[in-house]
Length: 324
Image (cartoon, rainbow, N blue to C red; front, side, top):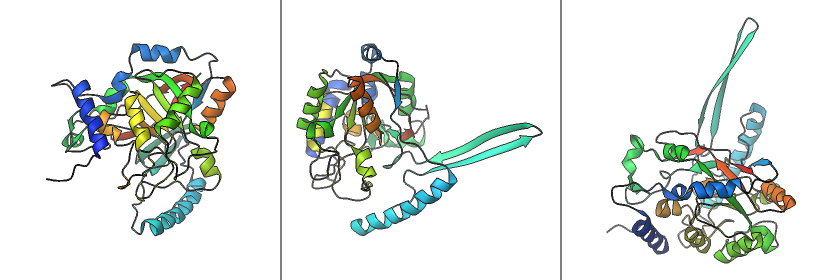
């Protein structure tokens, strides 16, 4: 019998979710289904100043900056290949934009064609249920083969509406550091401490916005490890992933990803996409939001994440907004 692709702790979470949340003959739509009218009203109630802040990292397409980034990416790839002792794939997370400008007399018309790899460690994106699976299926259960024909998770999530109360958990603040380090993965105790500092009681369907200090880490000149490099990195470990699953969020937004601090370097939190249908927004820009909420004397807001309704998509670039 082939080895179980899920670690025992993750299989236990998946089995419990299946027993309590799945109805025979009905596809489970994952964590987004927890965002109901009450969750949306909780979010709306947090908007007191009428301010909004984007949680998206900018998607760079300007030629001069792209040339500079390409040189940096090539050097970065050489760096990580030396550590991984393996060839790394090209283009993961790449965005290509063709701008078409036409002039007709005094009229000017602009259009463009864009293609992108939704995943990777750079651009802010939402992972669909068809991003990571096991046993020939995605969460739901949805047959993996449906991705070639009619998988519709992203469309359903877009139509459901991802708008709920967002609660920002500032891990560096409770640790008294600038950023999370690879030798100390984020634990359930860290998340408990950060939650206690907010004074908020989490409810099912809330958005967990987990700030780990990635903006400071990168500003200091450090490289964040891509997924193809099998080694620990700053992020959330098994204990923190179990904590997330136990608190029933509607979605999770984070800057650093999985710590990969386990013996097989597995993706601890990303594994919850299959286990509980977790909606994840990777590479969120959270430092400015943490500072803005701190200045406003709050840790909450209305989180709005509206993905483009693309059938069969495994993920989409997204601009999450936090209103407070």
